[in-house]
Image 1 (cartoon, rainbow, N blue to C red):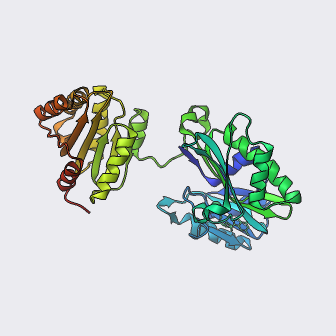
Image 2 (image 1 turned 60 degrees about the vertical axis):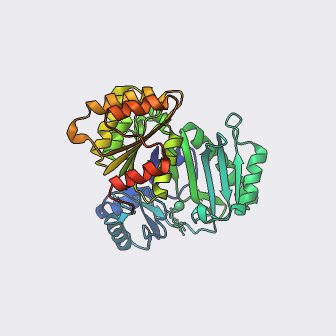
Image 3 (image 1 turned 120 degrees about the vertical axis):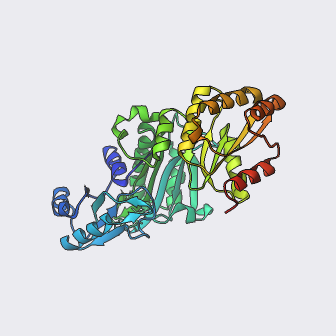
Length: 377
Ligand code: GDP
Ligand code: MN
């Protein structure tokens, strides 16, 4: 998932002809004067932190300036900020437009329907999560024909636009759809989409590019993302490994079991610190690498929760034991195991021989690992 900063999203929008405020990016207050003149940004102007987190408006990361000194001061103040844990390195300066209305528009991938869904609301400018469901129109779009006439009319109605503005929005819908498809996005969000006279202007841009399409986008290769150094290594090795902020490691197989395990741990007061989804892997080399990564995350204890289905318990257990024996002694962690399913008895016996006890009961095993990690939070 490559999340693009607002200004990068807007650079894409510009290529597709979407109406935008004039603006420029700076990295120091000294660049402000030149940037404003260069981009033809008049006063009053808007000074916006380029961070990936939302809610900048409420959080003081979007400011207004009526002259150069104010713009420089706002830039200095914003560059000194850490917004929701993210250091601000870039600031976007834009002309301040007179907003008549703020709308919401997005296209996202709806994974349950396996279709892109366009969302539109006349109540923009606030987080969409806080808008009541009945005020949001959702239109699932067949990707092959793309957005068609009646779908667009439904969206225009939801946005409560008419006349020249509706014609602008109609054109915008096509442009945003093209951005979504041609740029391999999994999310394109414009909030607020502002009505300024007859114009419809994208005041904000949130674009997320699909990871699976990253090979088509070398231009994003060096964009820093929110992966930790260990997650970065895991990604290169194609291991599903995610760090959280607790102290218990979870090793499970399959996304469903992994997520359920995290939930159960949390239910009993445990704090998951890292999880590793072995998926269908029983390649001991890969499992060894995964254990090595787990060790580097320094969990207080690890819960190994395995279901033997198509890959039988004994096969998985043998792979795990092989892998564990490759891990140097100083990297071992307290381990609580639970292995259930096909050929369970053989799997349990293999683990047992390697000194790992498998507790069949989920609650019991979860409580054991929480105790091994120092007790519930
Ligand atoms: P977010 O809070 O991180 O989503 O940042 P936004 O880019 O959405 O900006 C927050 C708010 O600043 C918007 O909802 C607008 O109300 C306001 N804002 C941003 N640009 C302009 C502008 O050009 N003119 C005016 N009047 N307000 C703006
Ligand atoms: Mn916004």
